[in-house]
Image 1 (cartoon, one colour):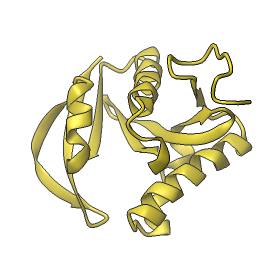
Image 2: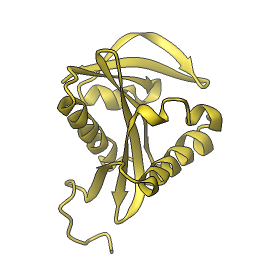
Image 3: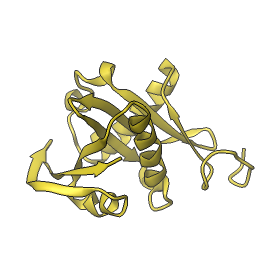
Image 4: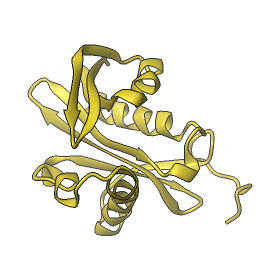
Length: 153
């Protein structure tokens, strides 16, 4: 399929799916590894952690290729969004916002009142535009500065 094929997916042809198969999970992990491990230097054993099994995973496809990923898990009253990633060659096209819309929809459907996330500080502006607000100061995770952000659903 070329880039001009008709899609009933998102406005930009992005197809964001909840992971329901091993193959889709492998696709999501491939995106996460490319971004967090290879690009940003996060250790492999930190990238895949003990929460994989109790999270809802998302993978975003463009023309059949995985280009984005995220995961969602409940922590008390909050739905926590983690591991939001878009491959370097596909940034700036609105894909991240589309992934977040899908994740927030699933969180809302599961009865959560708000979504929380640890944003890399340099990405805080992206989440700010999506309606997230910073809570507290900066901290480090995997050697990268982050801020906690929350959004009511």
